[in-house]
Image 1 (cartoon, each protein chain N blue to C red):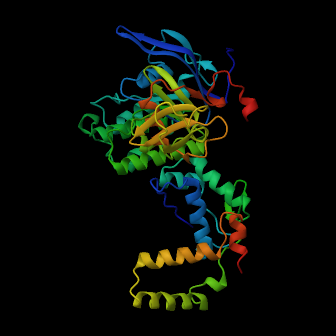
Image 2 (tube, rainbow over the protein chains, first blue to last red):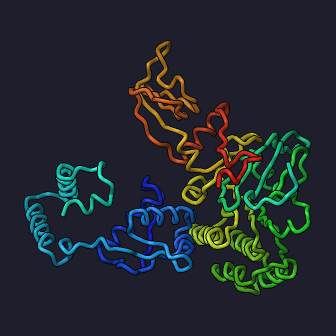
Image 3 (tube, chains in turn orange, blue):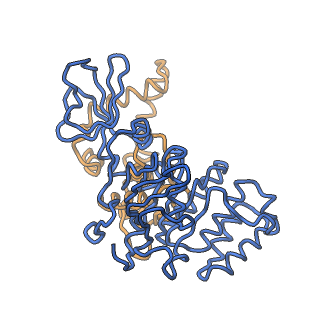
Length: 140
Length: 309
């Protein structure tokens, strides 16, 4: 099960926060195919947001093929976004850890590293054109 | 207006007005709130919010115009059971205990749901034998909300419900209200002057100002109709970059011009354009009493709900 954290001051639309947090959980393997998402009632009871916002987020996830509503039962995860290559024990992560260590030794602060990574990502991935779904699948 | 029941319209006012001895508190209000909406009513102090809510709950008699709930007048048989109202001053019997107050609710309301009422009282850890007079303002609010929700109304009207509650209780009760709306499709109409409290919670809006309705309808639709633009101020006599659009408010600070507008077609390329937040939008309207009103389709009285569905 996943618990959503809603930040009303973030400027990001509330339904998008739910979409992003669900995808993040799918990427990290915290949500697996067959898992049930919390009901709209459970989410609004905990977060005090509007029920329609939750339904809108779930519709968006459904549209992207990530979850499916089963009438009378709830909303269930259809497929995972976790990728073996990005796992905690994968070589890509190990290389990145080594690189961050080097950056740290070179005197870069957390924010310097984040800015550097963001600028390289910006350069290597063309954003804003592909749909979010493609973005994830298109760079294997 | 017809007299048949309408399950798609929770509340409809036509030409509604109320005059007190000192003058008109509310005038010429015509709007509709669709069933299932979570509607926030905002406006400055003395705008007529409480008067409008009192009229909707039939605690006040209109001086002119009509108000109907689910398509029928409030005094029609069975209508009382469909509406619950929590007044700003939460009138409760001070000498009653919490348990006695809930019992009164149970005896007086045929469709009473004890579980729903008890849950709200328990959530606040209120002892059943505590006298209402000994409770804090926030705790009394909790009992009043328990009574209102125990009644299982189709339309729940709340006047400044959370103003005397601590942040945790506020969050809990807002969560409870939202879950009520999610499970039973209860229509909520609540007034508040804490704009941040409503953002993310409400999906419909009523802006009441100086006894009139200035904005009514879906929050998303109202927000989408507006843009916040800024750019260099062209100065006196030069072409106004906001010309041709409906301007809600223009502010000039130094050489910078900022305006909240409703775009009518292409925007000038010289302007930087962003989307306003609900709070920015409401503040702009409150600062600009002359700004034109806006009603979305679903907020117009007599709106054919079948078309919108």
